[in-house]
Image (cartoon, rainbow, N blue to C red; front, side):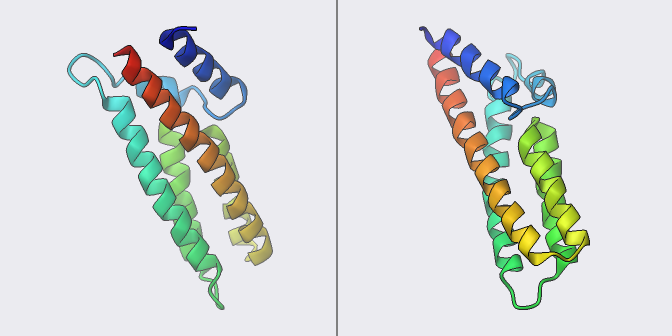
Length: 138
């Protein structure tokens, strides 16, 4: 299988498993000959910021007195970033985290944060693979 076929298979898998939604296709429209690295740059920012934000969420949720408003703000930050790159499962899991914040349910927040991390890490790994394959093509 050549690199283009590998990339197409990876993308098909990411869409069929719900990792990505159509917003990712909109992101790809930003890339052209004047800005050939647009998608990979946005993805790298998403991955770097997401990792930092999830780490901050973990710190906040492990405090003796949890500031659920602040937790919700950080969860919304990840939700917005996820929506902009089409990260459907990360976004949906963050929505659940926000619901637990509204209920001030620390156990639910912590369990859901674990799920956010799992979904984020899975997507990040696939994004990195996608970028590596894309560089082989270009």
